Length: 231
Image (cartoon, rainbow, N blue to C red):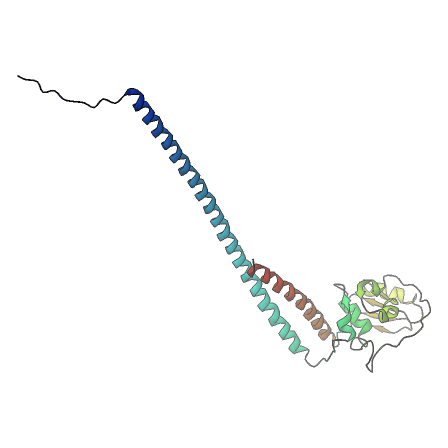
C-alpha cells in the first residue's frame, strides 16, 4: 500500500511565542479597561443612588414645610379674623415692641393703655420731656422688652415678680410712680392699687403676639423652601 504524504505548515517557534505574548498583553489591557469601566459604572451608580436619596429627602422636607406653611397661614388668618375690630396702626407701640417669651402678660397688664399709642402724630403719643434720674428697681421690665427710647422711663420703673405673694410683699417698697407686675399679669401700684390677673380683653394681645411669631416662622419656612427648590 502506497502512503500519502501530508504537508504541514511549520510555524517558527520564536514567532509563535511572540504572538502568544502579544495576545496575552492585549488580554491584560482589555481586562484592565473592563475593570476601569466597572469602577466608573460603580461610581456613577453610587452618585445616582445619592442623588435619588437627596431628592427623596428634599421631597419629604418640602412636603413637611408646605404642610407647616398651610397650617400656620390658616392660623394667622383665623387670629386676624378674631381681632379684626382691634385697629392698631403699623406705628403703634405694640408693633414696635419685642417681648421676651413668657413676659407677654406682664407687658399687657402694665402697658395696656399705651399699646395702641404712637410715638408721635397721634392723639395718644409721647412728648419729649427732661426726666430727672429715676430710682432703680429690681428686675425691671426693661430687661425683658426691646422698645423705643421713649418707653425707657416707664419700663425702668416696672418690677417683674414671679407670683402674687411676692407682689403684695414688695408693694410697700415702691416709690412714687413705680409698679409691680407678675408674669401672670397681676399688677400692684405705688399708691396701693391692685389688679389681680384680670383676663379682660387680654386675648387680643396674645393673638397679636402669636401672629407676629407666626409671621417670622412663615418667613423662615419660605426661605427654607426656596433653598430646597433651587438646590
